[in-house]
Length: 539
Image (cartoon, rainbow, N blue to C red; front, side, top):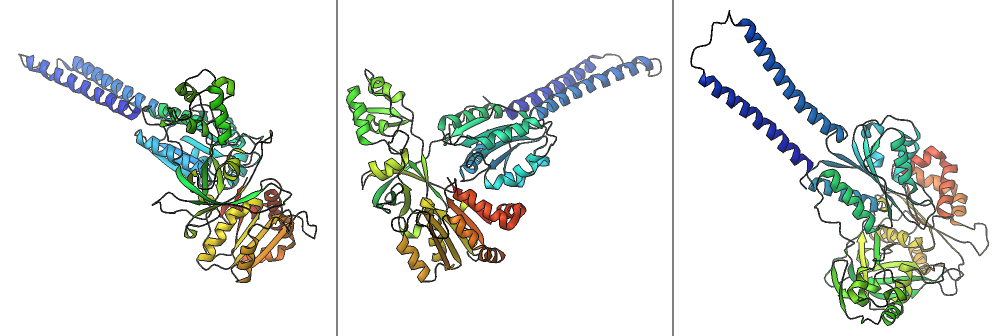
């Protein structure tokens, strides 16, 4: 299908050719006139009537042309091009918005990319708007969208003439799945905007949902033959080390992992970025399916547009019920497989370390089986085996200027993202660093304790406050320690400090919010968020 603007161009060209043909016909008929035209005076009335008829005809042609163009403009929201708005917490919404803009431009349409913090209702009025909106926590908007949600979405506005669509990103493990995307869509509709198509929900970057969004965009842009968006371009990293950090802990086992890049690959990421892992099923689970089906794992099949062994296809897909696999040939079984979703982990190192480091807690599902991603990394994958990995930029959690003081707050495996920031700042000589870290017991859960103590001793950390919830003492949680140091916190903020939080969404992150709200007021907290001085990577 050709782009809509190509069809419009053909229509205009057709109108122009028709006018030229009529003009040529008039000239030919004039040439056939053998006698001179009669004198003007006796023919005045008929000539004026003819002139009026010609004027009416030309006016009708012009009105028809204008009506067609106006109708097309109305169908496009009355404004040239698309406005693609992203509300991102970890960077995925930004990446998908960029892909959306690129696809529209490839289809021949104009499109601009805007952060939700940069727009208001006036910027949406009469536009064709596509929103890519993440939900964080239990239905909350991303930090960068808090001001928009609290001001623009809290008022009644006139969005008649606006047309929109929403791609809502979320995680079905949370009760309020894609809640901010739904609230945004409801607000747009409630204020008069017309939906171009129904909201598209995306669970953990589900490729099927993203393909549906892309298809709808293709229909709107009049170009449905563009290639599908690719799945994450994983590279085979090597699991070089796995070390248990908390033997004897009351909590789940937490592991320090080190991965080496493929040969010849340049290490390139920033503190705050994310490692996307392509998990795999346990080898014994794959073997069980093969035994029941009677198929050989070495049989080559097509899966996800790649040629691989059946065993590899089963390893990176949701495993079918054993009986459902019985009696199928290898390719038919592969055709029925659905790929496993990726898992995300904060990177705990910097490229200068020569390897990518993670801090991962082994999680368990309701059936007591290891979690999909953590089970693969912490239990099933053998040292020396290949790990499918892709690094994704997370600009919302990138570091502030190194000249600014930095307050780092986290608990549990949230130390991973904070550790990368500390390493990056130490590498450039930034010493005004304050870490507040919480876990269960000092005897078992002092993650990277020797390293932190050395940084404090050498002046690379200005302050280090560790809080252990099950050891008693004055402060039970990290937010309690933050409140007790309110005077120091305010002094650091007066000096221009930024606050970065990484770790538990439940308990710790809301607790830090409450402390800051109590000390600064709601307006003060929102000011920190809007200026980028308060950033979170919570889960």
